[in-house]
Amino acid sequence: MKKGIIGKKIGMTQIFDENGNVIPVTLVEVGPCVVAQKKTAENDGYDAVQLGFMEIKEKHVNKAEKGHFAKNGLAAKKHLKEFRFDDCSQYNVGDVITVETFAVGEKVDVTGMTKGHGYTGVVKRWNHHMLQKTHGVGPIHRQPGSMGSIDPARIFKNHKMAGQYGNEQVTVQNLKIVKIDSEKNLIAIKGAIPGARDGIVFVRDAIKA
Image (cartoon, one colour):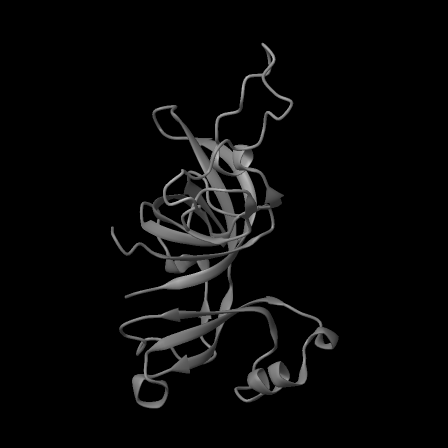
């Protein structure tokens, strides 16, 4: 069965396996998530389930969102995410998805928004080399050199230049679940995942596993 869940990144730590080896892990608080909507190929053109995560105060919910949840008799949630599955027959509106959906040793794909660094130069954004800082070279050291040539006397598109760095959606694939804590809704995923602490992430079973 294809599965997915919404979570919140807690931070990184390390655990030890039975052989005493150190395993760097990222702790993610996942679920419980409620199925807020179910889409079918007959009605919507594709199969998917919409999950809701985290409680929210009523004053922070707009009229459209209130109607969306009230239609199925559900409490409003802060975050919504749609997961497309080939077969959604095992999901029904109102079902609660918990951390127990996953198992230790399973491979997952994690999607999140990377940390935003704002407008940055080519050295920080693309790891360009800097000019010498001695022997009279300068006064500019952190700007790129020549970007074009005499022919065609222009800069080609997609050239690595200064600009917005970070704050983009990134998916890391084939990460292994090392440990699950059902009482605290925590999973320990081996390695790093995108995003800052307390950032919202989406965990689903690995596509390429």
